[in-house]
Amino acid sequence: MEIIILPTPEDVGRVAADLISSVVKAKPTAVLGLATGSSPLDIYHSLATRVAAGELDVSQASGFALDEYVGIPLEHPESYAAVIARDVVGPLGMDPAKVRVPDGRALDIEAATAEYDAAIAAAGGVDIQILGIGANGHIGFNEPTSSFASRTRIKTLAPETRAANARFFDDPADVPTHCLTQGLGTILDAHRVVLVAQGAGKAAAIAAAVEGPLSAMCPGSALQLHQHATIVIDEAAAAEL
Ligand code: GLP
Image (cartoon, rainbow, N blue to C red; front, top):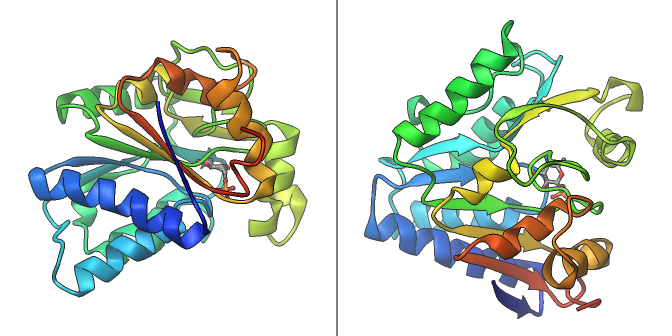
């Protein structure tokens, strides 16, 4: 695990974007693992600035999102399909036909999640997976107690995750109770992983993920098993290291 500690959240976004940019420059058809949440937004802004300046072309790259809510329509502004389209595909000039999000409306969830993992494998695997981390240590929507061997599947959201994500919904009761998420095993299959975290609210989760024991109680600690994991954090998120 490589740990990079930087002064500001903007620095975190820029340095993580440098990593992603170098992957895409070396392989224009790279497969990107896309995360939602507020943590990666500075990465996407930084990449979008490079695309607008003509320094980077992501139009041939493909993408697989980490997760999706179950039980909200695709066109809901907070569905991860809508978030990925708005925050990533549009600003980066990615080809929408090359970007997939797990189908939270699938009637046969088991078949849909197995097909999602198969599609990632058929694409040659994820070249670089972008990750944030929840205050409880979750990555993707792999809540504490998730198996390190897990594949893409349906999960129940932890009460603290529903509370944290209530800010995106008009009414806290509107936050879905279930989600689809790539498993920890799926995430660990990515060729390279870059996890970003900013702010004091993530300090305990970062300390547990980086220095704590490997534990299903801190899903982020699974990244200790990955050979090419880079953790890019600001000083506030590094405070408990
Ligand atoms: C969300 C997402 C995760 C994200 C995490 C932290 O619910 N499913 O992919 O990393 O929780 O979110 P944020 O970056 O907004 O703090």
